[in-house]
Amino acid sequence: MSEIIELNDDNFDQQLTASEKPVLVDYWAEWCGPCKMVAPILEELSDELKDKLTIAKLDVDNNRDSAIKQKVMSIPTLILFKDGNPIDQRIGALTKNQLLEFLNQHI
Image (cartoon, rainbow, N blue to C red; front, side, top):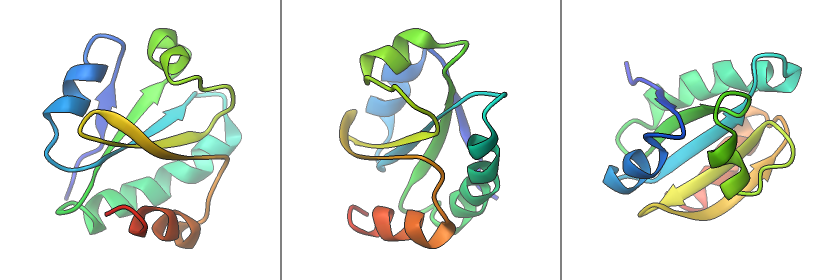
């Protein structure tokens, strides 16, 4: 089973640039209902797409600097990074099919 990486302000840049695969970062918070709806979908996809994609989570309440750097204004926000750079994003809760459609454009 693939593991979702926990990001923070200290390891954010290093984790993104070190990954050989694209990284999907889930910007979330504990109090966010839609974030809780997306979480189990990301768990499934982390296993299903483990050879093509790394999935990471960033708690915006505890890691404001990384969220501000990417101009995250609403959560959940999902940003796809390649070679440490953001290449696309989606805001709001997505279904598994919507998320797969988004990811399949890039991986």
